[in-house]
Amino acid sequence: MSGVWVFKNNGVMQLVENPSDVHCDNRRRSAASCKKKALVYLPTGQVVSSYTCLEQILRGLGWERYYGGDNDLFQFHKHSSIDLISLPKDYAKFNSVYMYDIVVKNPNVFHVRVI
Image (cartoon, rainbow, N blue to C red; front, side):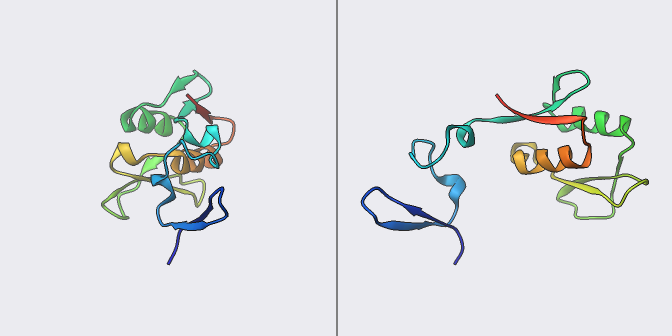
């Protein structure tokens, strides 16, 4: 059993197994967690809107596609590091977790913004 325990105003707690399914009208969630996030390429201020766009930027930064892993993932690696960026093939599943992974592995190049 895994999930998040949510405490209601009447003191009753409930286990929510998929917290992403909780609607934004839940008072306990912050406004920022309900807003959509975007990955921004800082040198140009460009919002990354597709994997084609992201791949072009990453290639310019020295990242290469990695084909030795899971077929359900887009993966990139750099010869100068041990880092591997793994992204879901379906861009609709590209969320802030993946965005922050890119930010951490490319300091001062990308930023996650609330839009």
